[in-house]
Length: 109
Image (tube, rainbow, N blue to C red):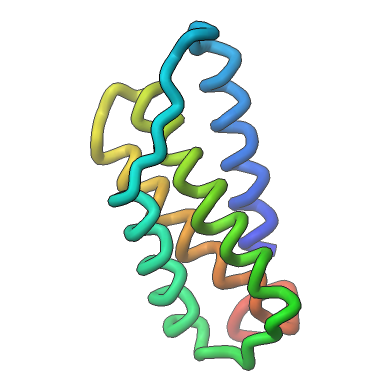
């Protein structure tokens, strides 16, 4: 449930940024944000109790937490004009993506 809500917020953030950005705006990949999102995903996995990893669902965590989270971090940085917003978005989406690995919709159940 948490991972799904985070994914919807990420998509909305990216859509708003793309709508407001000029068509020729550069779309660079921020490798430090990729690393932060991946590390936050591992920390999130540890915090929710290291659930048994279903390898079939691992792609959801990587896609929504790392790839989409990095793009959302760039969008947050561009929209807010503050660097910390990008870092907070990357870490938040990475940590929330660990929810895709759970067997139940809510952690700690």
